[in-house]
Image 1 (cartoon, helix red, strand yellow):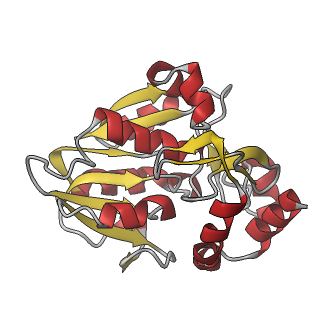
Image 2 (image 1 turned 45 degrees about the horizontal axis):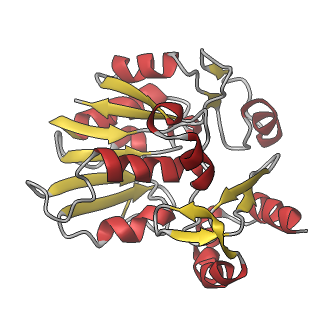
Image 3 (image 1 turned 120 degrees about the vertical axis):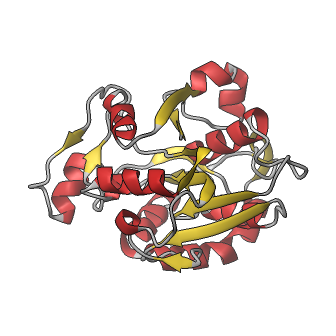
Length: 260
């Protein structure tokens, strides 16, 4: 029953409304699922199980009852916490951050950090202060020290233009993270712009509003074509088997780091 309810909600309820509704559901879910088997590293709360998530076919035990983070969010947070000074309250300098399509599990936490100047950007999200098109960002050149743009590019047919815009607004010496959906066995990107209906896109690309599956190798070539230097970090290289299970991480997940 729980799986059906989550699947129906994702398929029927518009994402901006889902974000608002989830704010009311979180306190209840923290109580219902509390335990000590799995831990969400974003808020360090532990639970007996996580929730299912997915549009077409649901993945079990992946959605944190407290922060509503998925595997990719927890990987990103652990990277920031363990391998950067981004979350450090006493950094060397104040950082300007462009957060495209702000993730709910990060939004409040980033904005509470006094050393960060965070600008949320999206077309529709209620969490974004600035609305617009990623292919024509309304910011001056070299504006931001850090750029986060996660699970956005797969929605954009002309993704190279969007990547070039991210490069344009990043300061020299800046860095960022641009996660996208990848299949574990897909090396080259699969896209077909003749596929336009929601049903066909769901069939071919896993979600009704996606236009491609990115390849695990040529995605980085695309980013480099836009001007970035890239680095691929893998869950299996940064975490032990116990940590992967404890934090509910995806063993196949790759974290794409970009630098200018």
